[in-house]
Image (cartoon, rainbow, N blue to C red; front, top):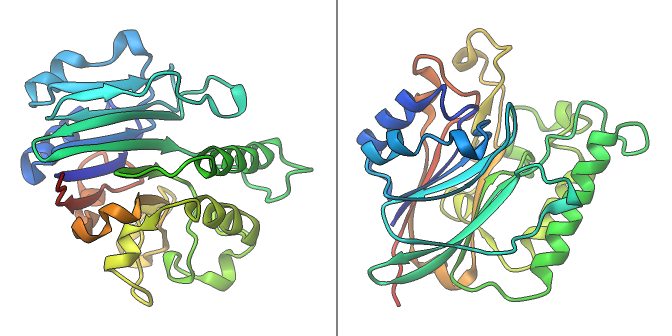
Length: 266
């Protein structure tokens, strides 16, 4: 199975990019974040024309929104958590039925957290920390086997996941309190597939700000997009790749896709 995760930053706006990505890379499953489309307007017909036969999604107008697209049958997880009770379209999950077995895919869009890294002064940051704790507590209740957790988690946890560890320690997405919370969530039963195959000190980024006119020259990136797997799937992880060139396509998202090739054996 070739799985991809991408914060597309408006699905309808970037349908041509999704079509090119689908043709170029031939993913079997793609998880999208920030689809920014309410469910009644989800572009089913256009996606079917690209070959996406199965999909689960939860969206809202103008912001947030998540979706899982698949070439294989999907069984949506019912009664999925609504983190922090906000109904803000940040999570969907589904079983993917592969010829060799099935895997459970969790697709997250974690709150960005605003600009001030103090939950007492910034409600957005407080929301982010509460979201992370709820997710940790939920996954700590059970052992999730045959599971993949992906998405824009909006945290770059490691020193070499950011362009300057020292300069970003007080910047939201790389603060110690966020990193600690993310690591506690991962420790409930997941392995960072990207860093398993591409260990530090190699730099890994998946996001570059629109504010940088020449993003490639400045290269002030962060690894905000992640793929985690349950330990029973780890031996099947064959490749992980950041599709950096997508950032140079016309009208790009500020995030680029991350791709994993996984062998699933029943």
